[in-house]
Image (cartoon, rainbow, N blue to C red; front, side, top):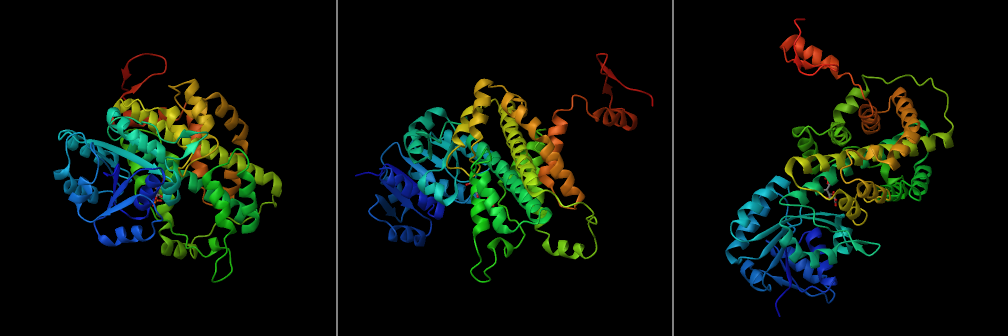
Length: 466
Ligand code: 6PG
């Protein structure tokens, strides 16, 4: 019997995707460049229909046609090498899907190359980590719709489901799927950093214990902040270090790593004139965190403010922080979804924002209760300029803004670094300013460079002999 789908790349994500497919009734052929990972997967099989191959040609020939081959290979050159290795064995009409975190422009290049050879190519954004890959991730496929439709039965089957609906939908042409995944990760960075800042305020300013903060996060996870990242942060805070008995969080070195997708989000936003300040601040927060040795040195030279403030009412301030975190999250998602909207217009992609919010509700890292409201906002107005002005969020953020203002001011006065909470407030205040200070910039540009300016009252372009 021929296999119904093939998976290449058997690291943790690839193995789990293969298991997920087999658990959903597929006959799965698997292949890995090195034999060891294939053997490891085979050793842990428990009757699943997963069939190992050790030669590319055997792997490809074991698949029913038109073939569907799913790549879970490290992004970059390895993807190109695998494509080159399988290409001679493929036939017109076969489909390759890249489920890794590829840069969307690489996906577009591969799409073009393969299309000219009659091979369908889908850039499939996948979110959910190891557990998601096994039990159901959020899936963001981009490429030709007709090709997607052939792959859809498997993709929707292995995706997470929310209220019976699969967290998988056709995203758009060419690299649109990987683009959506990339910005998802930018939002993820911002969301994570906002949580870290809320934690810092609770710990340093309100002087709460790690245990107490875990309890606060657990409570928050029962309300409108309910989300995967809040949930796992509570669990992280409950975890004790086996060596010292301390909260594990206190022994983890404060140096954040990153693999690049958040950075790509910022670069794309900067290149295209899209305001993504919160996402970008979260990236820079990781960069500055990695200067650990310098920071330790600077601490001995540079002091913060003397804390002369009165103690704060605990319960009142816990709620201000909840509000600050909520509005920060809304602003971060608003920036990410604005990036979708502006890029979609720029590239004529017609991204389905309402559906993107829906498929983010399950499986993915940024899954959150309020994605239902985000989806409704786009359902009511598909060309909504910004989530902040949708009726639900407009009311909410206006209600909560004082919480954010208080927390940012109090934290900044106490010398706490708040890159994303303060960027959220700045974004909110900049976006709602019908009149900004950019007239000063225009005047300066005209003064030193005769760059001209427009007037508020008269049409045309002006230059002044300053
Ligand atoms: C996901 C994650 C996943 C991964 C990223 C982020 O959606 O499942 O985003 O893709 O965790 O690589 O990693 P970095 O923080 O290392 O950039």
